[in-house]
Image (cartoon, rainbow, N blue to C red; front, side):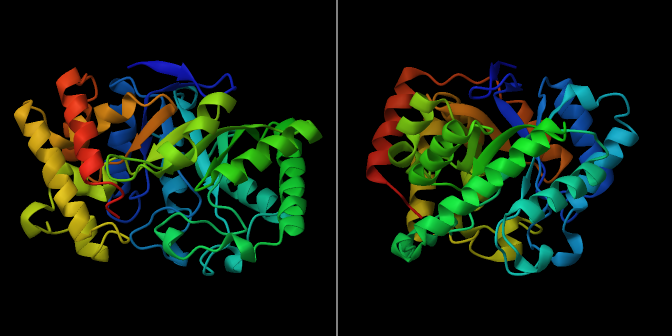
Amino acid sequence: MRTRKLGTSDLEVTEFCLGTMTWGNQTPQDDAHRQLSRALDAGINFLDAAEMYPVNPIRAETVGRTEEIIGAWFAGPGKGRRGDYVVATKITGPNGGFVRDGRGIDATTLREAVDASLARLQTDVIDLYQLHWPNRGSYHFRQYWDYDPSKQDRAATEANMREVLETLGALQAEGKIREVGLSNESAWGAAQWLRLAAEMDAPRMVSIQNEYSLLCRMFDTDLAELSVNERVDLLAFSPLAAGLLTGKYRQGAVPEGSRMAINGDLGGRATARAHAAVDAYAAIAERHGMALDHMALAWCTTRPFMGSIIFGATTDAQLEHILAGLDLTLPAEAMDEIATAHRAHPMPY
């Protein structure tokens, strides 16, 4: 398993990262604990969580359960192995009330969230602490169709950023967090965080966790240049497009217990154009004798801004299937065909 330093930090992470967002809903604790052990056996050293997990659905009564499951592994089956994982988690931005009555990210909520995550994870330090989405709003999660940045108050945004950076610096000095990162951010937002951190001598964002896959490539034209030149690496979430790129939803199939069976349209991803794009990519995989999901993950590794690719598995069988394809290298012919398919099926959701 290849590793790299994440952004400008000293965190050495594997190019694949174990996602955890179903742990505590679709994936019970015993299964999650097996995944934690199996991923380490496969050479993966990077683990991503969030205080709001599990999702599908998000519920106030389950907030933090995923972190509790991880903490139970560190205290139980994984006792003594905390140092084997680079642990990342996130603070929830403004929300519908399922965390802290909907309050966004500020000095007070940061301290509350970090202390709560440390307790649930049963650890003394969080290796990478991320802002799940910005207070000012975001075009992510299919909000780009009507997101209006003119409604922002720039002075308030900058004041909040300064407050957050100052608090992150204090938490870092106290040894509670090591590095900091963004999630669901824009190029402008990321640039402001970097500018203010340099001005204030505050913690520098080393990564940005945004959605990225064969079907979701906004990062290519939005953030790629910033990511490469400023060394803010992408942590790609949903690299299989919420399961679309496994092929399990082709020809109208909706497997029992799947994400689509729970929330219907995969958060706005399951469009007619997306299904057509999946068929095009599946044809490429079939021509080259590859599993579609293995091809999709391998393609992500070729991107010049990639820090790590976050994949999740609801079941042990899904995890084993994914692990079996993580050493795949795509032939040049397949890469050319993927580029052609992307031009024919741009931004399918």
